[in-house]
Image (tube, rainbow, N blue to C red):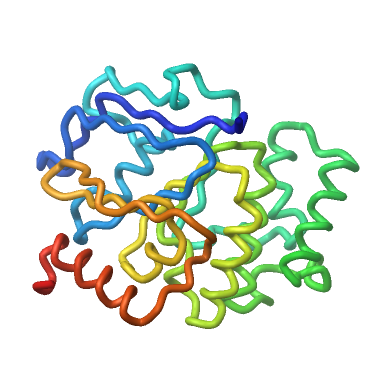
Length: 246
């Protein structure tokens, strides 16, 4: 049985400019699973992730963010990866990915060795001393992924982390993320049904302030679907989003 905690959120309530996004929203995601969250623009997907991460203040003090059994999460229990890489321009690659350990005053040779190993895996070893403005968009996103992985957090929240890169780089980052986050519980926002089908164990749609469980896929990730399977699932997802009829 996995020792990785799942994620449980209870009583999430949030408004934006006096418009309710969701009220008393509660859900549980199983340990060591990858869940994708879809929804129309402005429905509150990113706000929900920021609320879970502690980056937004809830409308009510009753919000509870725990593991799947209702137990408190460990310190530094949640890692956050935003759509934009948010690299610090005055730091080089190595210093950017070890910034968390530096801020916690825990940076040591073990952390440095882990960082070097990650850069090797991400094909960035020769860029360790480079500044962000010397990197391509795909390289910057790989650095952001490495920084996320350096956080000792069993739960990872990702807000459209691959939307700013080209299709080839996105596919490469999908494969790397699935491998390197295999022992974490991941919740990711995406606008792309195909990306959700490729990455997730579970797919949810946020609409009218409610979460709808849309699909559960079991098997190897990234999922390699036949054209027929993919098209049928995409049509179903789009119909639920209100896009096209199945």
